Image 1 (cartoon, helix red, strand yellow):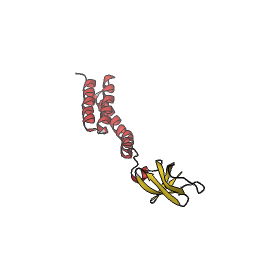
Image 2: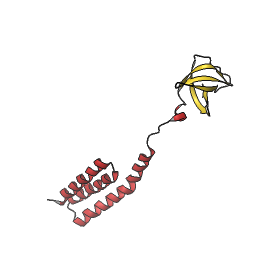
Image 3: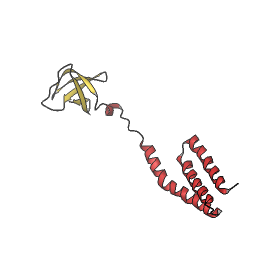
Image 4: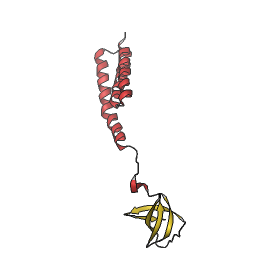
Length: 140
């Protein structure tokens, strides 16, 4: 069997744990094995094949791995708790002005204050929550 085929089998063999464990390192080594397979297919000797495998694998580890882990660690931005409230709609329960009032936000009664001092919101109006300051919602 030709050496390029052995390298291709190694690449496939490294792809199996990549899929089974979701560790990207196996995929990076598989790319190195594909590079070595191409080198073997071009007629290079065994030393060159191993050299290409090592260089490509190490280059992939050095360049791609940090990017992949940075992306994995960052994850999606999920807003929870009071961080999720700005941007929500609320229903005015008691008149809201610059001095205060009450709104119903996500089924709970909150104290609220108008964001702009000249605005007044009457009961039954819908308002947008702009910011949460302590236990008070600033609405517009």
